[in-house]
Length: 452
Image (cartoon, rainbow, N blue to C red; front, side):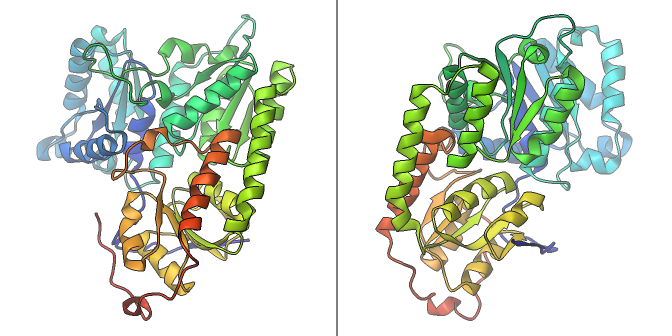
């Protein structure tokens, strides 16, 4: 059992946490014809926009109400109204995600009430779904914002099936730690069981890197508003990641569709549970293709455990990703020299680690030094500085990854995705001998990390 330690430092020298508004915007980018809008200053939007563009290497539709000093004091209802009407008339979106930021939340604006008043007097918004989300920067992280946005979409758009018959269909609520590549794999697996799937949100259809035939001012794909309204006709909801529990509960409350929550879909045990679930829903045996993929994963685990056994790995990631990766590498025989995340969640206490730090990359470096070094660091691109100082290889994963190509297409779920992830990690460990002594300049302290 790991001890959860929240450092709660007044200053983060090299932040790991990504803001909640960005997570909410990312969720709306998985909706078709969507245009998220931050209710805050231009700087809030510009920062999130740059991070997403650098990670996905795609054009990201994102708007702002551009609050200034006067509207911050007197209220930003006029900016919200102007923004909604302008977007609706020019971009013609299916859905607008109105996302609060720390600026407007600190002021205490009643965004939900303002939206009701605006919609009552501006009939041009009747054809657009407007979903407001409270996601201030000071509360939670990217997981928090993503989960809040999905929950808000469910509450605003999902409807009971009524007397309509159930469809051979399931709902999929993927966590924000899953890449567009991961979601595409899960859609293919569900299709193998003869089931249709409604994914909320579906980044695999909007941020998968395809090129449009003409300019589109909104998202290039994703789940339609009409599809969300059909989620009540599904037989089951599959939620991935603890931060998707609230959305799954909200969907069940509104539509009556039961849900199964998967803490992860990386690893043999987790995937076996998904196979049993889908087989039960579809009423058919697990397809031969998936059985063969399972056999390949077992073989890969047998081949690779020689290279993981006794090796020391450090991980810095959001809770859901830390849990998935931590369970995988420890199941293969590695030890966790350091584990750092952004939010305290109950499941992390079950990691095979001495402790899990709620902190930043400085905390990661401190833990590695205390452990006498490690063989591999798993983190996003901001871990490159720690990696360089400690002369330890960095395997980039999570968000953001801005100094490598193909981050959106990396796959770590499913039997084949797990197999390929094990292979990639194992190859890095094979290339690197067991960690040697910590460089002399770091043995009795280290230079504080810098953001970048």
